[in-house]
Length: 383
Ligand SMILES: [Zn+2]
Image 1 (tube, rainbow, N blue to C red):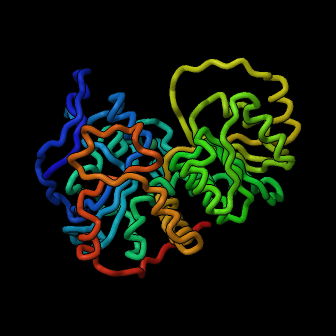
Image 2 (image 1 turned 180 degrees about the vertical axis):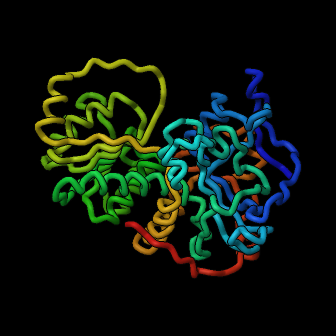
């Protein structure tokens, strides 16, 4: 089968190529072979493909990339819980083997304490940018077929769902009636965060570098949010003050770390700042630490970091994407700005992607014929 591989990662001179590799075969009755329909690309893929970040599986030199997947079960082991034709996505992270890691041992590898976890397509395990992959049924999530067109967005949306779930848990400390959310950044994550906050009934403001007439700005407006191009002069503080209302919830989705500290200052009393992005560049910042410390303490503010997601976050993401399509039909289609074939990935210029790129392993018009039609997927949502 064909696969996109970052080659010779361990030799320090890696390259990206479309390779022919062995087809996966079932080796255990819990396993499933998944035929990949599409894979979404994000900032992590960009780093892996451009800056050669990424760790190949133990004993290998190459890594198949891609972690945002949508596929259909081609062959199901007898104990996998799946059947051929099931539409599925896969959880990205796999638990570490350390018996003392209580979170990995309890289905929460997204809270792994040892850092010895494995992530498909990122760290220590091949990803999904290939025609097929093998997976333990425990790490697959069934996707209802009415979400066929947008199922590839379940993984990125799971990141938003995890942080919202965490914020709700934290805010059980008080009676919290949030009215206003501020989203920093208008990449795929920021835009999904913005529309999610709209569906949660919040007034949403998005502050980002994209121009006022950009597609990003239009998408924010079209889900009822307010978009503002980041002003170099005034900065975030001036923008937030200009809103003239308390900002109960801030989602930092740019990864530009100085913004995280500015966001602490603009957060309302009892508010939560969620940090979702990283763009490592060893930045240093001089901050008014006394002022920040005082406002954090005297106003009960909370800052929470969040990475990855657990199964239930994937399940909630499915629910939320269905809700998005129902309330704002066509919005998700516009989020995906670029579609390409597997062959185009080695020469991909990430700078040419306005918002979100999806690699179609199987042409979209063939998808419906491969999938067994069922919307009877029961989950216990925790919204
Ligand atoms: Zn662990």
